[in-house]
Amino acid sequence: MTEETWGRVRAALLKRVGRSSYNRWIEPLQFREMRDGVARFAVPTSFFRDWVSRNFADQIRQQMIVAGVDVVRLEFTVDPPPPAANLAEQPPVAACPAGAARPPEDADHPGAAPDARYTFDTFVVGKPNELAHAAARRVAEGGPVTFNPLFLYGGVGLGKTHLMHAIAHEIRERRPGDRVLYLSAERFMYRFVQALRDKQIMSFKELFRSVDVLMVDDVQFIAGKDSTQEEFFHTFNALVDQNKQIVISADCAPGEIKGLEERIRSRLQCGLVVDLHPTDYELRLGILQSKVEMFRAQSGGLKIAPGVIEFMALRITSNVRVLEGAIQRLFAFASLVGREITLDLTQDCLADILRQSDRKVTIDEILRKVAEHYNIRLSDMVGPKRTRTIARPRQVAMYLAKQLTPRSLPEIGRRFGGRDHTTILHGVKKIEELMATDSQLADDIALLRRALEA
Ligand code: ADP
Ligand code: MG
Image (cartoon, rainbow, N blue to C red; front, top):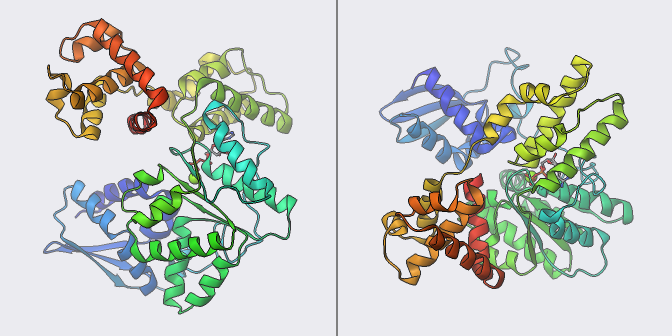
């Protein structure tokens, strides 16, 4: 494998594992050689070696294969970097995984402040997130535990982490004596493995069983990680038994998390499960307006031409994180150019983001995804068969095509094996009708929509 290929593999891994895992666990890997299907890497410590081979080896290997490398196995050898040589470039945690560069949520510092920006005050409520918001508020207000756990799910950048931090803030204000512990599932696993290594499992258990509110973010991360799941399950049960509040987030519904143990799944489902829907135009507008106000309050003198905010809300639809990045960039730009931000300037400044948002879902993708989801043949999707098991998914695809693409009914009809536009209209109507009463179908469609829009 050349350095260049390894570079590409790393870029792909960055996308998959996220920036913080990447910095901590992938970046420090030093590729040494590739022989007889074995890829060798040098790592700084034995703990690092165990952690990476346990949690990232599969993904690394997979990405190498995708990049065309003929790899059967990975081998990690401990080879600490020479002292003082390039320590400055090393992330501090690499040489000392238990070390200083901890995210603020760390369990060692139960008093550490959650992110100050993420409060209920700064959370803009709209139709897509009102239920999740209301449930989070209820939990934060305390009182008798009515639903346990609160399970929040939704695609990336829709506000799960924000809401969890907001709960932590609110509880801290209302009941300063309560112990609130927020951490990511990845962090939970990391601490668990560390406790195993250091033979500190008792104090690990104690720590997690002594909190009043436990919040675990992105729980899908522990799917497939057997001993961590096991420990999570016990922690969970112990807290529920003591009537302590638990809040969990994930990127999909409990039933959809692959590799999650059945008993955990059913436990997660027995509280309140609410999802954050993709944003709609109004919510995006609301978020942008609140950001503009915040920015004005901070620095004053920001001139934005009429229509710019509306334009952004219309065009940047992927998620709130992207929207935030866009408005921040625009502010920076505004303070540089020192004049009114017009539509033209906006289009220049945000060209790359706008281009990405232009990615439209195609009817082909819809057909493929729906066929896959219902496990039927692609040819049957557009073919003549009229049995229910095929006709229903076909109608689902028609509905999604109408919702997610700008195509007209006759155009959609042509792509569905030359059907008449009235057939398409009938299918769309049928699904709209069924969704109102058939929650399984509504869930299926929400899932498909998320997958297609991702
Ligand atoms: P998730 O955890 O679901 O991936 P985050 O909670 O990290 O998403 O949200 C991504 C960014 O978008 C954060 O900066 C957050 O403050 C912001 N955000 C998301 N939803 C809202 C909202 N309804 N109002 C204001 N900001 C939001
Ligand atoms: Mg998050």
